[in-house]
Length: 300
Image 1 (cartoon, rainbow, N blue to C red):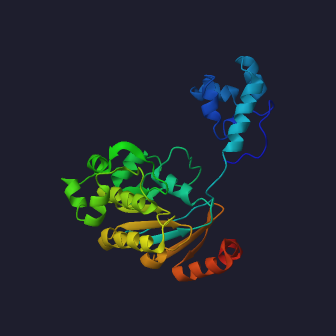
Image 2: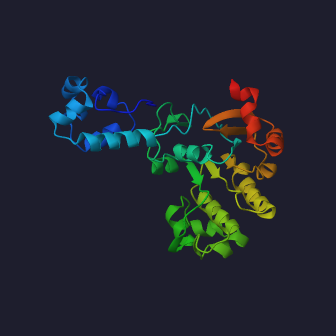
Image 3: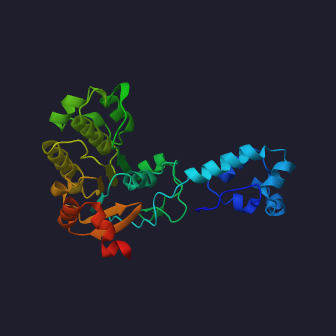
């Protein structure tokens, strides 16, 4: 819920409780209205000032906390409607800070973000309230844009821990060129951009995914490396009918993977869905994302 008006001492408790983060803040004061329906019924028409007097709460501090939470709780994604079929590859393009990475995080279940409306369905099951680790076990995998370095842990050790395969490490050595270079090195420590992307790919494959979300896997790579990454995705994912969502800013990798549908997101809203990815790339390259905002589809 978006609340435009500032919370004051005269705001009634029922309205305060509808504000983002209010219940979590009020829980610090152990108000009975949070766990007792009768108390909530009795108190809902009290003003915040009256509540503070009754329970000896510092009104100034409480108002500061509530209004900060209201201000910080911005609506990032707006009316997202994205459906990816089994065995389908889709792309999601957009300018910086358009909501691309946020959408990936929401699909994976990052608790930092709260879904105010709608549901996330995966293979017919509602996973909106599912914890991230359970989403991963169900087959959703996210390849990070900037994966962290883990000192003291070799990639081979990490793969042994996360892999769903039996005798997994031998499986990865079929990528001899990649495996021998990375398998015995610390996870993302002193790796080049291309090596980090390959490390992420190996981790993705170890989880035997049903849906893979690549968050700007082409970012920072030259054309040769992009092609190398794309070939591995084609061979190990697309050829095995695994669904893929390619999140990208530049769109360079699409030339090699040719998605069935290309989506454009601007200001947290998907404003375009197009089967011809070349048309989308050509428009963005020539006019930028500003042209997308003026498209007739964006204004429907």
